[in-house]
Amino acid sequence: MIGNRLAREVFENHTEIDRGLVQRTLENELRGLNRKIVVLDDDPTGVQTVHGVSVYTDWSLESIEQGFREERSMFFILTNSRGMIASESEAAHREIAENVAQVSKKLDRPFLIVSRGDSTLRGHYPLETETLKNTVEERSELRFDGEVILPFFREGGRFTVDNIHYVQYGDELVPAGATEFAKDRTFGYASSHLGEWVEEKSGGRYKAENATYIALEDLRTVNVDRIVEQLLQVKGFNKVIVNAVDYADVEVFAIALVRAINAGKNFLFRTAAAFTKVIGGIADKPLLRREELIREDRGNGGLVLVGSHVKKTTEQLEELKRCDFIEFIQLDSHLVVEPEKFAAEVDRVIAEVEKLVAAGKTVTVYTRRERLDLGEGMQEEELKQSVKIADAVTSIVQRLQVRPNYIVAKGGITSSDIGTKGLQVKRATVAGQIKPGIPVWITGDESKFPGIAYIIFPGNVGATTTLRETVELLENKS
Image (cartoon, rainbow, N blue to C red):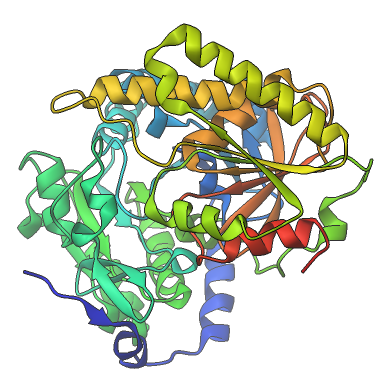
């Protein structure tokens, strides 16, 4: 059994490198990468490391062509596929791949597809990347040699060491397979070793022993030539497992990756948010200030919506309840199994929110903290019910008549639905991050509330105090 590790020992045990030299080298390599980078985001939190990029909430030919024609090398498509059942996700990814291949051919612009997934390894894997691979290869002459697996995400405390993926809890790094995330009723898993995780999730079709492992030692000694040679040997859509404990590791890998691509190799990517920042050439930016976000203060209250059920979210909600300037409303989400009672409950909540926000009060609406449990073998039915609950939370924004000062959405499915269905966003711009790993959209002119700051707060990110600190900053009380 893989044990915990002390974070300090892991971080102190690796050679420092000349980060400036690495970044200058990478910048030069990226200038020679003639690829439009299309990031498919399985919930809106994937933009938690970038700024100044577009997020499209549909994958029509028109939207994809608009993304391809943008000056910036990278754009995001929000799929929200983690909130879909498997057949829905497969259909969505097939359509996206068909449209990307069609636009690429029309504009004569090659592309990279990054499937941005959860840094704690939850999601429809390998279904999504296999669907992308098969569809692109059917619709074009492109053939993929391998798939890069890179779930490192420093802002969320996710690190890969000796091919083991860890989640940081305080001073310790806990193997991902031993965390609450691995026990997810829909996307659970047992393996923390990424090669074995791929073997587990693929039902043995891709063996751990056949994966290519990019070692921290080679990354820290900037042994780019060796990494390039490893990448040039990848074939049969086998997996490339990238170890990383710092952005510098990802940057060194990206240098080697671009060189391998320019030498003729083709890869698909299943990564967390750190990789998109690096491959997109996104520079660091300071955390956002209140004056950058609240551009039009009408004296109304803010709105915080909490849907995620992970332990961290519940702890953050309890901490938020210490704020005496916020009104709290619980939505009895378990009434979802009794449609008439649930509809009445939603009506009650919306009426209260409308009255309080218009009176200048900031409101937090949260679902019951106990996860709905329908019993063994009912995982897909539970997912369907969770979608109905998310629809109810979304309807609060859909039916709201008064414009809040800002909106915070806690949880991936929650934030996706509020963005696309509640705020009716077609294209948003990522302003940056309000706290590490917590992105902010500025909504487009077509949205329900144009130009509003929409804070997308992942369920599994931040310390216990981070949600409270975020709202205090927005309320100018920090």
